[in-house]
Amino acid sequence: MASTSSRVLNSFFAQRVMSADEAAALIQPGSMIGMSGFTGSGYPKAVPTALAKRIEAAHERGESFRVSVLTGASTGPELDGALGRVNGVELRAPYQGDAELRKRINGGDANYMDIHLSHLAQQVDYGFFGKMDLAIIEVTAILEDGRVVPSSSMGNNTTWVERADKVILEVNAGQPLELEGMHDIFYGLGLPPNRIPLPLLKSNQRIGTPYLKVPQEKVIAVVNTDIGDRASPFKEPDEASRKIAGHIINFLEWEVKKGRMPSNLFPLQSGVGNIANAVLFGLEEAPFEGMAAYTEVIQDGMVHLLDVGKLTSLSATAFSLSPEGIEKIMPKIGSYRNQIVIRQQEVSNNPEIIRRLGVITMNAMIEGDIYGNVNSTHIMGSSMQNGIGGSGDFTRNGYITFMMAPSTAAKGKISTIVPMVSHVDHTEHDLQVMVTDQGLADLRGLSPKQRARLIIENCSHPDFRPALRDYFNRAEKLAPGKHTPHLLDESLSWHSRFVKTGSMLA
Image (cartoon, rainbow, N blue to C red; front, side, top):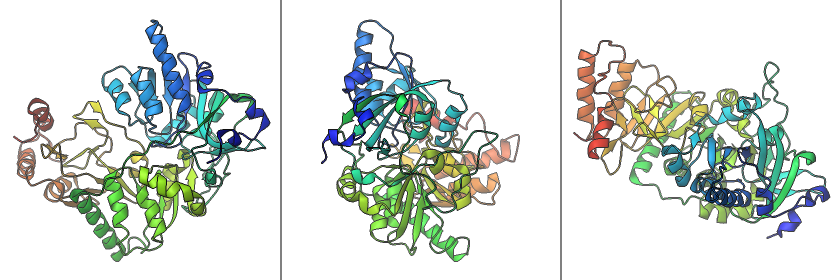
């Protein structure tokens, strides 16, 4: 592995090298900070950890010290975890996945803005968040001529660097130098009313530069690090995940047979998680060749499809690999340079591009209701889990949109199919196909009552299906409106029962 000093090759940037503690000392209380990072990849690690120690010391002295943090998506324990533990976060957006920070959010100590991933950078550009004081960006290397090689994710880095008054760079020798050339960064999108169309017509097309532009005059610190990305262990698909994967693959085969998509499908998008990976690994045995992916994150399953020749190209904004995936894939990452493109998330999650390419979207849900509304963020209506992420960007604009979950949770005490979701992230107008281990409901072209009957019969667990039938039949007779019949005094009673008794079962 290269030494940390060899990664800062430009003389100007080399003069700004300092320790993480020294860099953290430059950060002021109340700062609005844009940080790199997306699904545990490419986030700054040393400076946020040092900042957390500084905040903790300030709190021990009775001083107020918190900062607002904007990222690409979730980060890791050295950032969200460290700042969450010391109650150092005033505002967090657009997505998080850390247990420590989640406690602060659900305890009311940290403000959290759960926002579509494609929206945040443009809203910062529009000035909706006010002034950005600082950007802290992890990079792989700084070349002799000042060009900056991005890290294992792009996220919102271009916007943070452009909008921040000052910049701190973490140069991470733990990231492979072979990442150079894999990124495609598009500059010049512009602001309304002069915003231009993105000239992207194919999922593997390159339209920008592989280097991040960082104005020298903004850089106040460069910190050398050698810390690995957060890596979530990969679990072998369980029975429910394998059944969900089978339902989706059978559906795609039918769509090809009916002539509604080509034999190599349209570009694939897959959310993060074990169900998503099960679908990807299931595609190895499916009769589709020459597939492509236009997605947010690159998981183990997608790289495996590249390796076995089923997938020809991958476009995303970040890697999200298991520990085994990092060990296997990152040492040879240069061999994928012609197949993998890493873009900023304003491009990877751009609604116009998703619709133009006809992306097939597959995302997880916490619960879905009988009419096709989906909750993907909240437990029992009020406790934040992680966030909506990019699922809305893709579900609202995809060619075929899947939402998937096991039919039960909490060892069978929770039904993921309910009369009415306790929180709405994706409305009935967005979703086309709902999938559980029990089956698949194709909701295209159906009225609300037709959707309800199909979801109950195809997707609900047998332990809960009779109660759902009973609710819907009575709602059809007793609800004042018959278009989307609900019994308002009962529609959330399943959630209330769980909160009181620990089970949705009557």
